[in-house]
Image 1 (cartoon, chains in turn red, brown):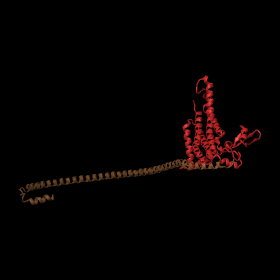
Image 2 (cartoon, helix red, strand yellow):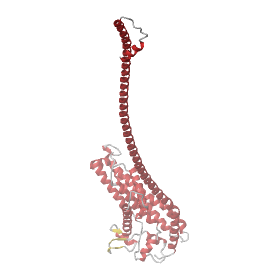
Image 3 (cartoon, rainbow over the protein chains, first blue to last red):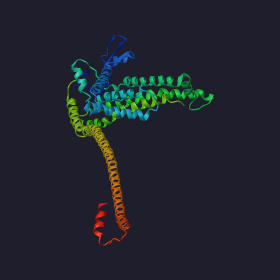
Amino acid sequence: MAGNNPSPTEYIQHHLQNLTFGYHPENGWSMAHSAAEAQEMGFWALHLDTMGWSIAMGALFIWLFRKAGKVATTGVPGTLQNLVEMVFEFVENTVHGAFHGRNPVIAPLALTLFVWIFLMNLLKLIPVDYVPEIFVRLGIDYMKMVPTTDPNATLGMAIGVFLLIIYYSLKVKGVGGFAKELSLTPFNHWSLIPFNLIMEVIGLLVKPLSLGLRLFGNMFAGEVIFILIALLPFWVMWTLNVPWAIFHILVITLQAFIFTVLSVVYLSQAHEHH
Amino acid sequence: MNINMTLIGQTIAFAIFVWFCIKFVWPPISNALHERQRKIADGLDAASRASRDLELAQEKADATLRESKEQASQILEQANKRSSQMIEEAREQARAEGERIVASARAEIDQEVQRAKDELRAQVSHLAVSGAERVLEASVDEKAHRKLLDKLAAEL
């Protein structure tokens, strides 16, 4: 709780603080009661809100698509089936265009990434005070709702994609092939192996980093602006909030799409021989 | 954190945003969905119609085939009948022709016989007269005895 009349700084900080459970040097395993406490926990902390909302959105995705799959007919589709089919077709076409290997994992992965990220991003359109306010009533002080504004969530997904890139690189090219690709491109000469190695390893590591940070950066920046707009007098708030929200319909879809397509492209590269 | 005007401001904004979505964001999506649904329905309709058409066409083809087969067998039967008829006719004709030839031959023979008889009669009357003359050693007036001679010839 940030007092009866929180200052703008307090308000913003409060909104950007995750609900954290972790190992505090003094209190042991406990909930963090302030941003400072959460800070002191360091690495051994869990953002319960990020975890909860992302799992909830994942569950919603699975439930929705499973429901559509169960009632699916080969006849005229119902509304839900129609919607799911449209998303499915969209992702399938995207994968078809971007992925040149043969791998039955890629399309389902892309569908999951796209819909999951989209749903998590979608939470952003709910006014910034609604859900935290409800949780404060329930005695939970912090609630940062949108998982994709937490770098832990976005980088977590990016690392998942990164592990798949490594796995498929090794599987398709073999250890030798992968090592050769890392050491002999772009300059195919033995004396330039160290240089190539540095370039390629950086290039490889930048992939998950750019994936995760791009999504996080866009979502976080949007969220901060929503919070800043919420500091305006209530009668002018809508003049900025509404356009920003409308703009974000585009942003959340686009960011989900970019994450998905780039993942597919990276995985496609992992499948290619040089 | 307490409830304050911020919440009302956000509610106003949210309401306008929702209104905007209902007004401008939802319709195109909804239209696209309906359009897709309609297309699928049309496609399925067309497919079922096509299959029904195919069935009909097949039925029709079957019927036509059956009909033509029937016709062919009919024609064959007719031809058979016709040919046996023709044979019968030819046979009849041949028989009639034969009979006719026989009849005419018979008539000719009769005629021939008649002529021979006539000739014979004429000669017989001469022979009779000359014989009688020789027997009587006198000439017989042919004219006077004409009647008798004719009668004699007719009796032959």
